[in-house]
Amino acid sequence: MTGTDAVILDDPVGESLRGHHADLARRLGRAATYLPGVATFSAVPTDPDSADWADLARLLGRGEFADMFSCQATPPSDWEPVFVLEGRQMIWPDGSRPGQARAAIDTGVVELGAADVPEMLDLTARTQPGPFWPRTHELGTYLGVRDNGRLVAMAGERLRPPGWTEISAVCTAPEARGRGHARRLVSALATRVLARGERPFLHVAETNTTAIALYERLGFESRKHVTFRGFRTP
Image (cartoon, rainbow, N blue to C red; front, side, top):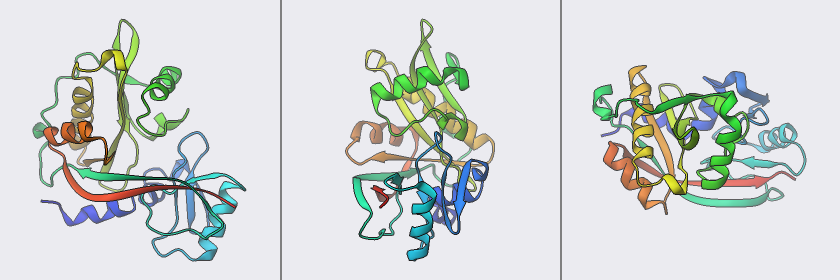
């Protein structure tokens, strides 16, 4: 069962930029986006008018990429479509306690920071878990697994709408797959999120059935279908 507070997840980017990530935001009127190097996600109100789209275009600049994430609003016709990706939003069940995340002890799991960014960028470039930029780690806690000193798996916190934390950038190097790294990392992050009184959620491509099955085994439930879209400003 999902709680009514999950409605806030209908606009996770906007809610994050207005709240927990306000210090990482750029704003103009009712439009908002993240600082360069942090994320390309942008937001307009749920009922945007032409002025809102014009403000976002000015905020981003001419011919720049606007990742509208799961925003359902349609931009003006002179905004060039860049991509469309069908996905799924999954959430941790309402009322679950931290112990129910079934997390493994954090043995071998390390916290990542600014010094690890070159390796994080290399790993995400090789595995393509989704957008990851030089300052993306500033969005929240990122955890990793090292093998002989080399970063082979990672996952972290991304969007932070009130009461929720998104788990994202879940990836494992090809040579290190099949060892349970993703399960350990997602479990460790979920336990941390629950321990501070929030609930974990995540997004996954609808075609990534392996990841969906993993998240379901860990206890996540599908909340709704989402369509991710990106555009280029006029």
